[in-house]
Image (cartoon, rainbow, N blue to C red):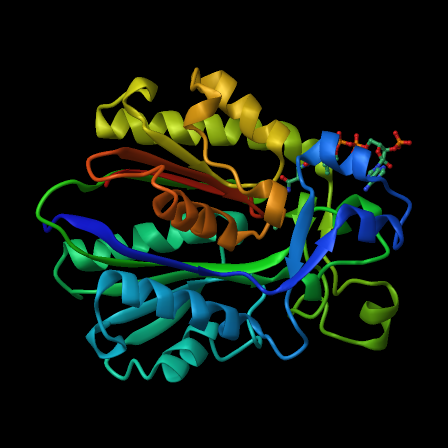
Length: 325
Ligand code: ACO
């Protein structure tokens, strides 16, 4: 098996900023409530012409530049998203065409907020087994299109954006362990019920707002803390490491209180956690992707460091991986 690592990172955040003050004018909420309950101050909103593949493309171009490779060098493109451009074809196919990555196969992964970790783990297998030399992984979302802007329980939480990573063979370090999980008995507590084969789009699904995300926040909160802590411990155990070995935790950015509770359970000091939730809110699959990119760019992750990615999302699904940079 070949050693596999992340050889380039990139991100793209839409220009438009929606602040908590803006939301105060839209629903019955306050900056104080949102900040203390979630840690979010503002989020980005894609322009009308920006579909998920456009965000993904810009993040991908940066990651390819960072890796020093050309689109034609890619053997595979995986896009993690729950807000694809269309039901089909895959968003990865749009990205492949826009990049001109003619030699690449392409597919999407639907694993909600754990999508980027699921996609990284999938990509890593292909390279480790010698199927592909370079794989592009993108987490990209335009969640503003599936957010009910009249529902204060959810609309304050989400935003749009994309993050990308190029994976390739490395001489040392790279992925030390990976761990993925799912409990499909929880599909009811976070979903988008309308528009699929169960509830095909109709006047009725639109009138009952079934084309927007539905969430039981309270229940998710408790599950998230336990699941993320367990996933981190499993990945560390598989790598033969402990929390003391971790330089930087890149957690899914759903709620600052979830993240701090996970860190407390793990016994990980707060200064080892990378956070960008304040600026972007929850961008689902793009949360860990943008956080990883920014942590690298800001020098929070350097050569030789041990990085732990840890995410959970609708499904419920979860995933963690330990990477030596
Ligand atoms: N502004 C003001 N008040 C609000 C708002 C708001 N935006 N939203 C809810 N409230 C009210 C509620 O109506 C409730 O009022 P009540 O007591 O009169 O009924 C009160 O605030 C408390 O509500 P809770 O739901 O108990 O608040 P909680 O502290 O649990 O915070 C939150 C809610 C932020 C949603 C939290 O539960 C959470 O973060 N959950 C996890 C979310 C998550 O991780 N999602 C999964 C990832 S997303 C994905 O996979 C796509």
